[in-house]
Image (cartoon, rainbow, N blue to C red; front, top):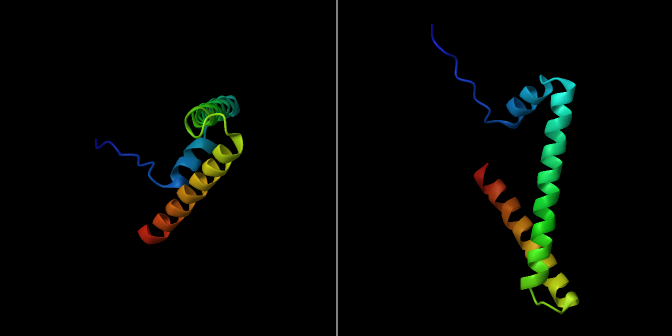
Length: 83
């Protein structure tokens, strides 16, 4: 008997597998992902406050915003090129 290889490469495959989970498993998974994202955001925020122009909140904020916009624009461009 051949084993079937399950690929979860596309977004729809992952979403479909998530939908087949029981409700309590979906809830737990959602909470874990939320805590992970919020923790990452908090850590990045603290590090940026410490290293990007410490003590100068306005300049640090403007620099962080410009860095974020640059990263978003670059990833948007990369997605268009890769399609």
